[in-house]
Image (cartoon, rainbow, N blue to C red; front, side, top):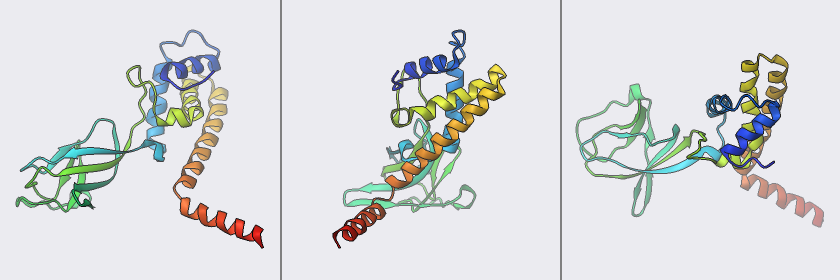
Length: 208
């Protein structure tokens, strides 16, 4: 069966476990699997650009829904965007003088700047979005591209509940392989220039 939605993932997990009495538990296994995947995966599938807006006189902006990890922050202007410098929260050294921020950090549940903003600057936050399926959000990029990663991670979480070390070990091995293959594919997709050079060299070699 296809695994493209939250409902299909739950049904597939039940089929692989050959258990009809875990309907209420499988969503828990998926939630635990997502917590693990959010910690270990850093692929383009989780990356997203989110538009935010600074508040005049304020140094902070609330983190957007689904925030997992910050990658970069820009002020989006009419002539392009200006990248802000990231500084660790304990080192940002804020001033009370309003102006255009030059540095930022993540402080608790907010983005924090090195100064209060003098304008409502439009911002673009590049971030990793947490994977979180639900009935209201039945699919996401990871499930669409790597349903095996989702399924095997879910089955791994079922092993301890069922007190089945053999089952858990088998699916841990499958999950490790699926994650390695996904990471390798992601690495290739981030290096088109290198791949293009290699292809050009191959074609040139064949032409000789």
